[in-house]
Image 1 (tube, rainbow, N blue to C red):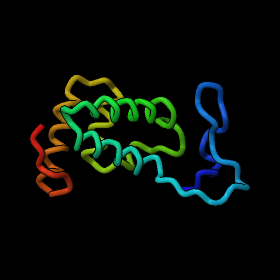
Image 2 (image 1 turned 45 degrees about the vertical axis):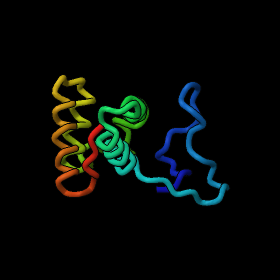
Image 3 (image 1 turned 135 degrees about the vertical axis):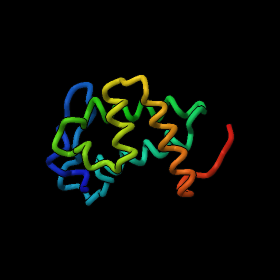
Image 4 (image 1 turned 60 degrees about the horizontal axis):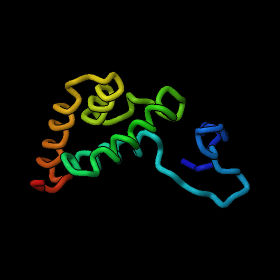
Length: 117
């Protein structure tokens, strides 16, 4: 995705500077869906550490700024990520058990290291 993509919001008070102007050099950014998955992966990696709240804050920005827009389709998230994101979005108390299940699955698949905190 290009940082000047017109689907990004324009400048808005309290919501940042918006999309890049098109005359700048081309800057590629991950799609909102891939970025969300990456943040959830980092949350799984840093589960039960001081970084956990940082990744949750980033996810709250995704919920506030791109959820429900045409650049973010929750249904395009991979299954485990989608289940956690949806539970987080609804504030479901079971979201941490879903996150733990995702984390254990990622460890099993060797996509995350087995770390004891």
